[in-house]
Length: 194
Image (tube, rainbow, N blue to C red):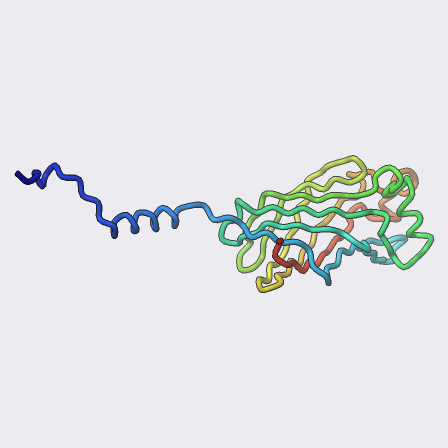
């Protein structure tokens, strides 16, 4: 006696494969992991007595997890040794390292971390993160363009309010001599993390 076709269980290999494909298609995508490569720069610009000056950090280390199609999984982390700040003026550089500014003897590095990313359209994005500097952590937004490729490039800009972090205290707190807002820009070349 053959089993009743109405009660017989039936599993088609084609249906099982289709179900697996459907499940994989709806699984969350994970961001690609990158580390900083050669050719990266991190610079800042301000004014002193009306004269514009620029500076750069000799070294910094960036790690990034980024997927433009799934920004929720993206993360950015930047560590900046402050002793490497250079403006091309020895007196100004030693002042930047002093207790009134970066206070590198007590706070050797700054750190920027972001885990909230927004699309601004096209290849433009914003990272809403926190900058930790001189023992103070405050929100800072980095807007950037993303150029994909074998070595993707992040080109970004941010504005940092120095007095929020106690940078330029005492007589240096006068914003008529040095503006509160410092322009920061970066170009980070990436390579896949191993």
